[in-house]
Each structure stands twice: as structure tokens, then as C-alpha cells.
Length: 302
Image (cartoon, rainbow, N blue to C red; front, side):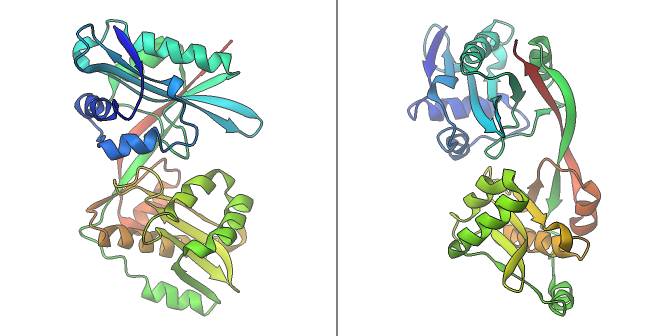
């Protein structure tokens, strides 16, 4: 087995490997580029590609990252894929061991699987990836939670918000698409109220047009809703949030519909609503369904 550090030259072959053997997912080249080089915490020493002896095509790929969370560093196995015909031959275990050594030497005490927000591919291990669940549990990872991705069929919905917006306008609340020159105000609002989402929201300001809608009162931001900030090019929705003292007025529903209509106008037939907590909210407002369930795992390093 030959181990190589990931590079631009190896990206197309690694993406193809993921497309072939991650049966419930897509991995176009542009998306793997976002997950690797597009991650500010990308580390080439933690992103490895395994080749078999003939060195013709990759048989394994792993990416790990280290994220600073509050006062501690967390490690993440961000992506892992092994050619199905080469499984149970120690390839995944060897790649995992190599990045584990690096994570441990970097002071990481806890490792989680896949949920490396804000730049993440999946919020955990899809319950249908039996081989992956078995691999990580055999490696000492423990399940501590689960979550779900929802999907909304955009083709049969229009998302008209005129009446809701008119009613909220009487309370001095207005809605609009954010602009790049709103960045400072957005940064202050997100940092104060939803700090973990700042980087993902900033990604939406790079899109043309900006894929972020905001609600304002007295020219102050009180709520936001984003899309195409992570996993760009796949119809990914979120994050969204409303300042605590303005919740319950229906702002979230308006912003959700404006974002989904924008995705529809961009040509998407389906929106993915990831890592969901309030399922009922989305069911009521966009007739969504649970599409995938993910198990969240972590491992404590001694």
C-alpha cells in the first residue's frame, strides 16, 4: 500500500472514489475541493490517499481537521472512504491510525466523526452506512446523539410571503436580501447571538447574488436565514436564527420561505435542511420530510 498526501493533482481521483463508494451521497470535484482546500483548517498532513501496490487508482481516502472550540481543540474525522473491494484489508484502519497519531500529538483530547462545522459534509454517520458504523464503533467511538437531514420538494411549492410580510410591516419589521456592505452589521449580530454560525454565514456573502436574507426593525438586524453557505451547489439550506426577544412573531417562517424560493429560482428541485432540531417548524412551513438520519459519535483520547 502506498500513502500519499492529498493534493490538487489527486483531487479528481479521490472525488471519483467517493462517488463510487459513498452510495448515498454525491461528491463532484468542486464539492471535495470545498471540503478540503476550502476549509480554513485544512491540513495536508491530515488528508491522505491510499493506493494499492500497482499505484493506478486510490483505494482509500481520509481527511481529518482540528477545530478550536471555545477553550479546547476538537479533532474530526471529516471524510473517510475505502474502495468496497479493498475493505477488511486494514486500509481504513491504517489511514485512521495515521491521522489519530497526528491529532493526539497536536493536543486533541476528543475526536468526532464528520460533523466538522461550519465546513462539514455530513452531521454524523448515516445510519445506512453499516460498514462505517461498524468501523468507528470497533475503533472505540461511542454514539452520543443523533440528528436528521430533511428535504423539501421545491417543485410543487411557491412560498408566497406577501401577506405575512405586510402584517409584520405594521410592526415595523421588514425583510430584504443582504448585501456585501452589510457584512459588519451581520458580523456583530451573528457574533452576539449565534457565534458558531459566523463563518458559514460569511460564505453566503461571497455568492452572487448574496444568499442571505435578513429581517430588520429600526434598521437593526433581528433575524437571518441563509442558504448555499456550506456544501455549495447542492441545495443546502441554513443556518437561520431569530433574536430571542423577536421569536414567536413568524419571522423565521418568512425568512425560510424566502430562502427556499431563492433556491427554487436558482434551479433546485429539492432543498436539503441539515442537522435539524425543530422538525415540526419545517414540516408546517415547507412540507418537508425526514430524508436521512445520522448517528453522532465521539472518541476520547487518553
